[in-house]
Amino acid sequence: MTDKPQGPRPAGYRKRKLGEYRCHCCKEKKPFCWSCPCGFQICDACFQENKWGISNGPTWICPDCERIRMT
Image 1 (tube, rainbow, N blue to C red):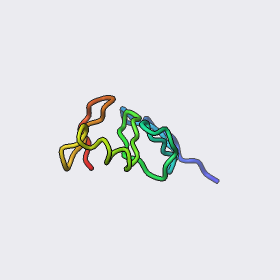
Image 2 (spheres, rainbow, N blue to C red):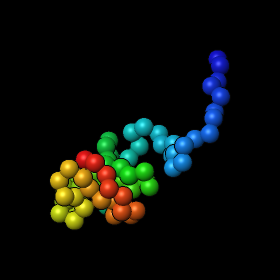
Image 3 (cartoon, helix red, strand yellow):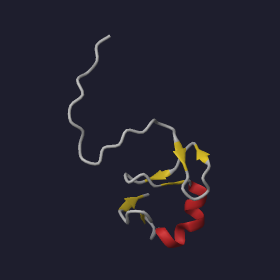
């Protein structure tokens, strides 16, 4: 078994195990969450409930770091 050499990671790189989501609003583990590179995650149910405050249609704004994200 050969290991690939690990080079430098790009700035802001985070390693996350696939499928591990925990909503920051309801604190439940979910199979999918809308995610931001800062680490904020929100499940679709909470996203729909709070859409009026974080989304303007095709984009949403992360409440933690205020980055503009695509839906």
